[in-house]
Image 1 (cartoon, rainbow over the protein chains, first blue to last red):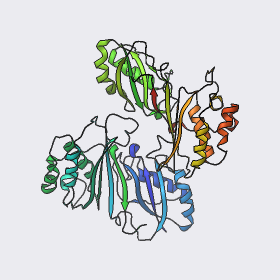
Image 2 (tube, chains in turn purple, brown):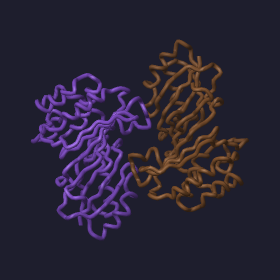
Image 3 (cartoon, chains in turn yellow, red):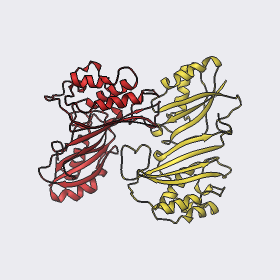
Image 4 (cartoon, rainbow over the protein chains, first blue to last red):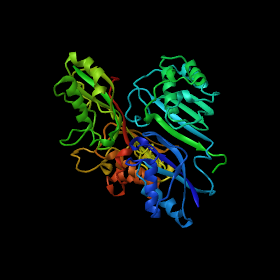
Amino acid sequence: MRLIARFEYDGTDYSGWQIQPGDTTVQGEIEKALYSLCRRHVAVTGAGRTDAGVHAASMPAHFDIAPGEYSRIQNGLNTMLPSDISCLSVQQVDDDFHARFHAVSRSYVYSIGTGRHPLNSRFEFQPGIDNLDIEAMKKAVKYSSGYNNWRGFAKEGGGNTTWDMTVSKVSVVENIRGWTLAITANRFLRGVVRIWSGTIFRIGAGRIPPEAVRSILETTDKRLAGPSLPACGLILTEVRYPHEI
Amino acid sequence: MRLIARFEYDGTDYSGWQIQPGDTTVQGEIEKALYSLCRRHVAVTGAGRTDAGVHAASMPAHFDIAPGEYSRIQNGLNTMLPSDISCLSVQQVDDDFHARFHAVSRSYVYSIGTGRHPLNSRFEFQPGIDNLDIEAMKKAVKYSSGYNNWRGFAKEGGGNTTWDMTVSKVSVVENIRGWTLAITANRFLRGVVRIWSGTIFRIGAGRIPPEAVRSILETTDKRLAGPSLPACGLILTEVRYPHEI
């Protein structure tokens, strides 16, 4: 039987989601936990890959087990996982369900904090700035919808052959802790959220105009795009499927 | 000249506030940073001591410097401090100001989280419980005002000779992440917040009645008191002085 599980993790101490020889990864820890519970290798397929240091509030992943193992997994997964990875839910899905291919949208949040606050520093970028131009940032994020070729914000060398992304929701919110950028799209090219966030940040700092976002999307010219912001500020918040599962 | 500085810290990796030989402490790190800036030992006196693993949103501390060192300290302290300790502000005070003796109130918050959430686990206790009896807890915290002998909630062996504490504010709030207990008093005996929180938690779990708090305060009998909850859930949030400084 095929299961979907949703995982929350603090990515600080991991070399990202995906298994890589010699590195400690989130997928690797989950497969290790499943090995302890099932006494055999159970391959886990995530809805996507998060980079080193990036967090997830909810990362779905599917894997196949024998029916007799179901209760063991429900009860035992959190006991076996390290404390910075948590299984939020497990449920059965159709045998042809695919966590990655069937996902219709992914949502990320990038947090920029004011000042230098250790109590928040694991989950936000703290550039030591107390003031960003929120109106310019709002204008800039609006330009981020309506263009499909996101090559200008993507990291090269990610093995991409197509560069389309359909962004369905973007926002920037100012709150007592700083600024939160949110973006939802059908898919994400490599590096896009952190480079896009870096561009919005640069716009908020008054270094380039809001229209730069439009130019980058229209021309796919990376030269105006911001630097990639640090991984700690990025959280994968939600992955959706066509039907509620 | 005498300065007061306020520090925020993530206490996870520290053996508490106070300097102890062989241990990494918050006070020790601050004195190290001041040594780098002033090239001599500058003794730092905090408003109190937090235990190993306890955090502070704002811990005031005073120390004396030469007038010529002031700007160096304002500009350089955060550069020298490790990333999990931050200096929020520095200002001059009267030469007889004492961060500990002149403090009139201290406030702590203890957070209990639902479920198992790595993104919050550094700053809350996550007992894996989704349901506590908030009405019983509210009743229990109300009993916490009005009694002055807190020996029943204090850790023995702390070198205390008096056991009085005047609690001026207590509350328990339920929110989407769990429960937050808050307590403000003129002073705190050793271990009180974590044992008091453990007692309120036990009451919320239905194991003892809300009136237990009253009995413990009236009789100073520790037998009904809860276990000391883990340090990670505890944050020193504020220390006040007679005049705004």
